[in-house]
Amino acid sequence: EVILTQSPGTLSLSPGERATLSCRASQSLGSNYLAWYQQKPGQAPKLLISDTSNRAADIPDRFSGSGSGTDFTLTISRLEPEDFGVYYCQQYLKSPETFGHGTRVEIK
Amino acid sequence: QLQESGPGLVKPSQTLSLTCIVSGDSIRSGDYYWTWIRQHPEKGLEWIGYIYDTGTTYYNPSLKSRLTISIDTSESQFSLKMNSVTAADTAVYYCARRKVGWFDLWGQGTLVTVSS
Image 1 (cartoon, one colour):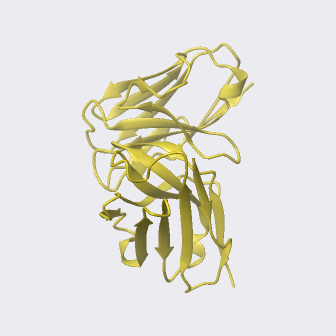
Image 2 (image 1 turned 90 degrees about the vertical axis):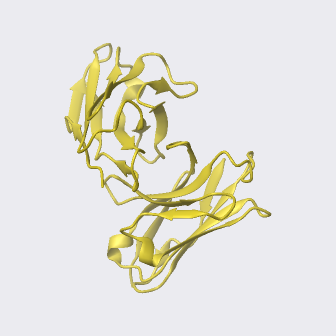
């Protein structure tokens, strides 16, 4: 199965700062087939990005996704206090579909 | 909207049974795969499997031998059965809607604890 490795494990940043989250795949995913989710405590994950770079409905434009091959990035251009949580990447090129273990974003 | 229901406590070796009711959307639309995903306490997400409205299923190979996912379009719901459970199956179980490859709608999740 495709292993997704997310880094860093935890990001601690202040509001207004830029957050860069990495997701590395154990094999090439092409230029699509990757999604990003945000999860807050006690809640289900929420879709942010599909097909590497397409924002889901009602997702603010401060969230952007990029990458191809084995290296993908989620960028939050200017952190807002409500952006805290754990962010997961997910690949859907190969079955079984797999998730990374997450990056925790803490707001200073 | 998706809503999971089922027992929160299951004894080891028994069968875990959960149902997801789909409201506000047609389970027969043909655009989606109806999915089960779980999350072990304080850990990441694991795809369990999904079903199409025709009844076609896809299972995670690591769990396949213990799984049955079924769909009842007349009742707008789909279900998960996992047999021979152990403590390692203790997790929050989510139902979700899969569109193309990503999961764009999730239930709130239900905690299932396997314990005697």
